[in-house]
Image: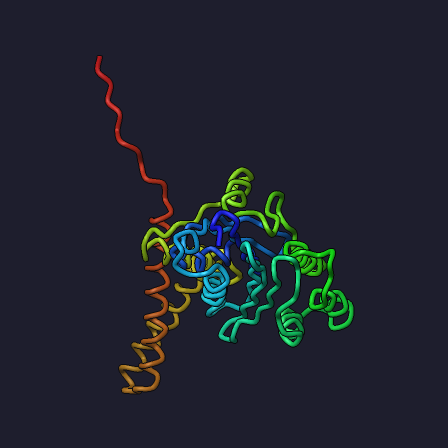
Length: 280
């Protein structure tokens, strides 16, 4: 295999904020960019297959599966080398499903795999399935990259957009250069602290964010304390273990909520620069 002709693209059906935390946990050099209103794309630098440790299809299948553990969105990974090309769909804890073509476009996958692919992605069982079926049939005019483009065209009906320069069949080094030129965000493992911070940022920027950190979160935590402290005092005087446990839970939630909000606010505050002294 010529490592310079190998490449892959991982399309995640989620925004970049949601994709960033699990992508960091891969501990690989990746570029993250939008790929439509509801999609993001990860462009790998490709060190694992450049070093010859594992073939690209196996590496990409592992990445796709790891990205979807514990999330609700799927990953469609496209990969190619000098001899073959293919796609892998990962959805949570389910076994990934994939399809493969030879370099000249000859299908070597199972028809049932493509049907499973469409079903798990929630594609139209009539129109989309009709356009996916030719990808599993011989076609002398369609090589492997053309097959991947045909698959991307079907996904385009569901919001996927191939960013400029990110074309299936392009070597990884050129994909990386094209993504960087257009301002893709570079992801690189910086340790567990950075990964946890990124996960917290993703949660706080989601729908539950206002109730975790900010004015609403502080109001909710204060309400827990306001309700829990009098209830705890009353439960202790009445010697009621049940109400005491409830009150303790409210007080604990309130205290932790205020403490978390304060810590996150302080961590986001800009740090003052070094003092500059001038001599007269």
